[in-house]
Image 1 (tube, rainbow, N blue to C red):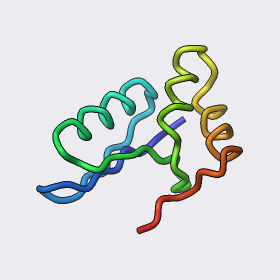
Image 2 (cartoon, helix red, strand yellow):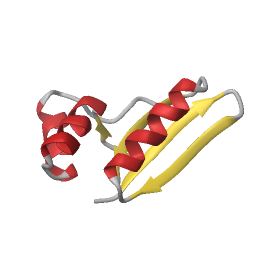
Image 3 (cartoon, rainbow, N blue to C red):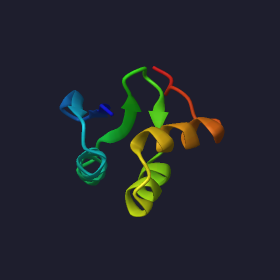
Image 4 (cartoon, rainbow, N blue to C red):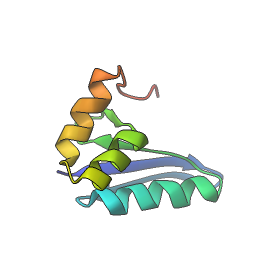
Length: 80
């Protein structure tokens, strides 16, 4: 499943596509440590909650299940 890491920070905006949940999560964490507001979205623009993705990685459920879990918790697209 493709994911998009989006970030806004001091040098502007970034959008990075990844098919690897671990890579996407690492990117978000790195970007946040250097002062960016960063998050992960699915290809439809729905935000994927970081905690749901972490749980998916640890328990080896699919990233698709993490997206479903985020939606159940009421997470949606980030406002522009």
